[in-house]
Image (cartoon, rainbow, N blue to C red; front, side):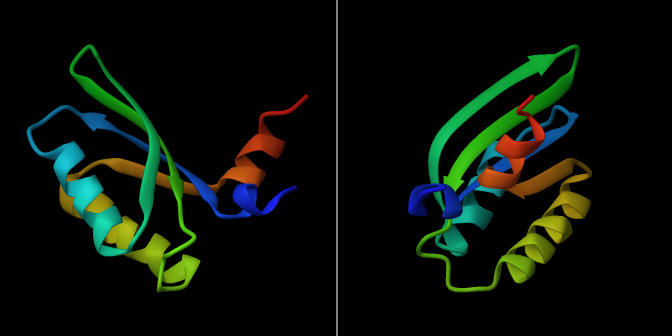
Length: 95
């Protein structure tokens, strides 16, 4: 595992589509100094689905505090938002 992997996280956002989801999530990331490196999104039968690869190298709060902040955002938006470190995500999806 290299240093880049330890600084990368995967964020998954799902729920009923509505205006402002991308804005709210990206503003929360920016306020925590989390950089979006890649982003994919789609709408599937009125459901919004977004996966983001982000870098937390410059984040100034703990990973737990960041996840707690994102959980609050998830509740405010009425969406499911999952945050995982990329190295753990990769291990979970490797056969």
